[in-house]
Image 1 (cartoon, rainbow, N blue to C red):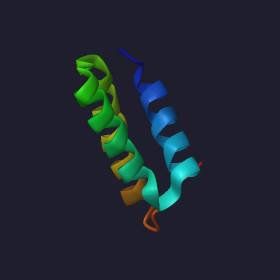
Image 2 (spheres, rainbow, N blue to C red; image 1 turned 90 degrees about the vertical axis):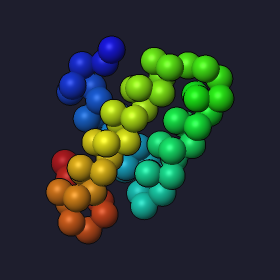
Image 3 (tube, rainbow, N blue to C red; image 1 turned 120 degrees about the horizontal axis):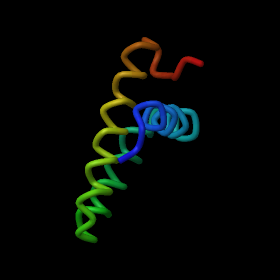
Length: 66
């Protein structure tokens, strides 16, 4: 499993790369990994998706803070 800091870094990277589409991107990864039967990958991407939501909530404007 990824370290907590790595999960936050991944979430921030996805948010900075995909902006407002970051949640949809994470959902797409979760769907693809579910279809592939990669339970560990699904778990990791769900944790990343949760952190994307937290970063968006914290930023207040839908963007990530550095």
